[in-house]
Length: 279
Image (cartoon, rainbow, N blue to C red; front, side):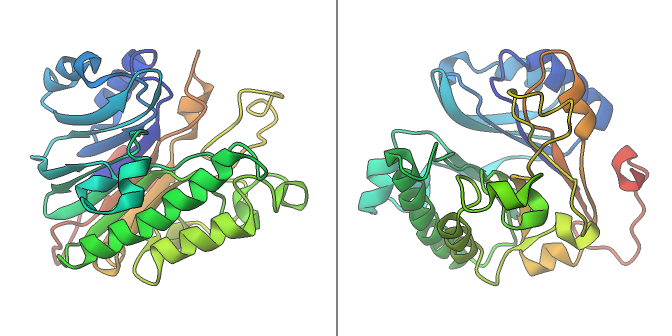
């Protein structure tokens, strides 16, 4: 089962790139962030014509998440309120559309667009910390159902020095502060594992390059788009890669897709000739 996450930075702007990528890679599930479109205007038909099911949770010009799947999308839950209907913080945070989840091939997939935070001194940073605290309760609620879990998306957090291009300069700033990292660790607990690091331990693997300062041309990136798996899924993982070439397209998103290939449902022998297994 091939699962991908991609912050597309406006689905209507990047629609043709996403459709072409789907034709090339043929994932079973693509989770996208920053769709930046109200639900009535999401281009669902473009994906449905290719045989995908689509569910989305968006808003005009900002944020927004969606799931594009070859499998039926069951028990779809939108927003933090989807798991925490009586949580006061979830209600206060619901003005920004950042979470959608569904059961996909018996896996609970949670697609996230974590707030950026802007700067340590800003109110947006405090919003980010509050949001992550609420996400911890969200996943604790989901845990009660004992579903295999995949949490993925744009986390806007580099968890380690090897996840940023200049750690000595960036460490402690926005997306790399100790409090952000601590809050994300409390979200993950010992239940969720960074599948990319199962296959690749080195630095210089980025998923986001700022549009500014020639970051792409100088390969000055960050790894802030993550896929986290519960143990039963991690044990069945075959590969996890970043499709860096998409950032080099004309008028690209500033993010690249991240893909995980999972032997699911588990089989004694697993063969997969997908393009990404050996790249």
